[in-house]
Amino acid sequence: MNRGANRQQVFFTARDAELFLALVGDAAQRCAAEIHAFCLMRNHFHLLVHCPEGGLSELMQLVIARYTRALNSRVGGDGPFFRGRFHSLLVDDPRYLDVVGRYIHRNPLDVSPPVALDAYRWSSYGAYVGARRAAEW
Figure 1 (cartoon, one colour):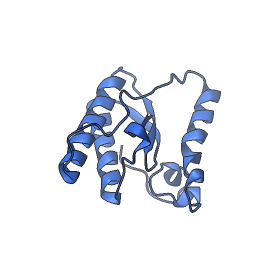
Figure 2 (cartoon, one colour):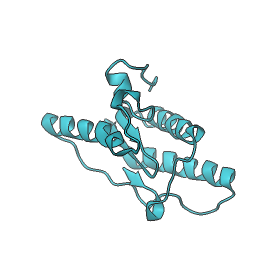
Figure 3 (cartoon, helix red, strand yellow):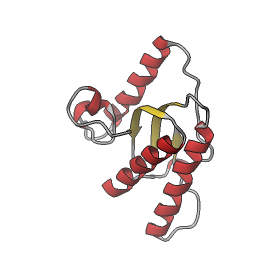
């Protein structure tokens, strides 16, 4: 998880979110990681990542640095968009895995106006319930 610096917005357009997810997919492939769930909100994101060979920090650095460079280039900025280092928690119990997955997928319930979880485009929930195709990664 990471949040925008000063809680600022980090996803401004659909293209921003698409780019971020493409970078996640590329980094997951490079780092031999599995992305089990995701949710992008206007000012933060959540990823549920399994890194069997380690490399979580490398994966996150690839995603955040490349996204920040691309976004700065697009908006003419030159500083960080994210609060700093990502926040991670170890998920080492199947019951906790369920809790974390639900937490990630329920994030869009805070969107105003309300949106149905299966219709929220920037979450993996729709793929889990068959409302849309899952990302290749």
